Length: 422
Image 1 (cartoon, rainbow, N blue to C red):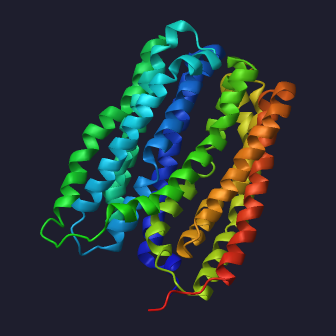
Image 2 (tube, rainbow, N blue to C red):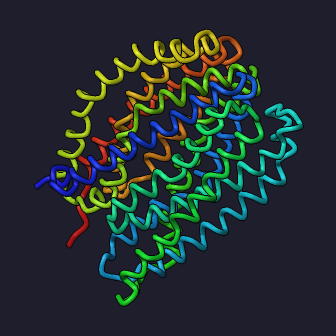
């Protein structure tokens, strides 16, 4: 039977959809609390540091989390410690290079983003926080590879639970110290790593008596390199508008855009659950007809996604008006455009798994590179004229370009695919 409809798969996807919903809700609450407590200018500066955290986190991942899942899941009856150890070593090397490079570039970056001097210390703090988060999520990848989704789910929520708890406490006490709020938000990944990593080690011990998996470092590097490039391009595309807004407009423009972005980003929650469950399974698909059925079923989900998107376009601006009043009035048009873009893109990551199944992940890299180029070029025209709304228009255009390319190319690569001989 088709893998997507297997009872266990559906059960795991339902669990992870719920977990991603809760995690998205927690991140949403973080955004609401910080935007509510801080002035638009302060929230705009903090949003840039959060964007730096997001970018460094993706770069420090380097595709190693998906690589770990790929090789550990491929050898369920083999000892996983050698694969995990190699991935950890590569991640530590990558993290060190990133930290040293960004430390050397801090002067130009701080000047380009026009941070006030009293917030310069947050730059390195956000980078170290991102690296801690990258190691935290590697622990989650061990649970994913072993399909221990209960542990995965609990661990997935830890960082945002810590953030929301701290921020909510400040809100209840009526505290509005900018530095204290920054400490609460960016310290959470360190605490999450300390809580989760011991359980990951316990999971590895369950295969300690098995023979080792024969995976070479060169195989790991060969698999991770396309992922590294694609992840870097993807996060560059996602965050380019924020950085360009800060450079070309103002902290207030960033504040309005980021508020809309974080609220709108709640829409693609189901995508993470799909990727988490389907990644170990889609890789096992070999036949052309099986892959075509998978593609058709993914695209049919638009029948569910599009009504949700329309509801979001109508309701999200009303929510912002009710919670913030006129404080973030400029974000109302922005969020309509961003939710439409997120709704169109929500099925692209699960559809993109087809390219891994046919061993053509380079196609995704080229699509993401095209989207990134479109975003940067068009931002130079739209942001100076329309600010955050211009950045949102560019996001929608880039999403349409990317979605069209993935839908077209996925059909082509499947029809040209020849299964490996047994």
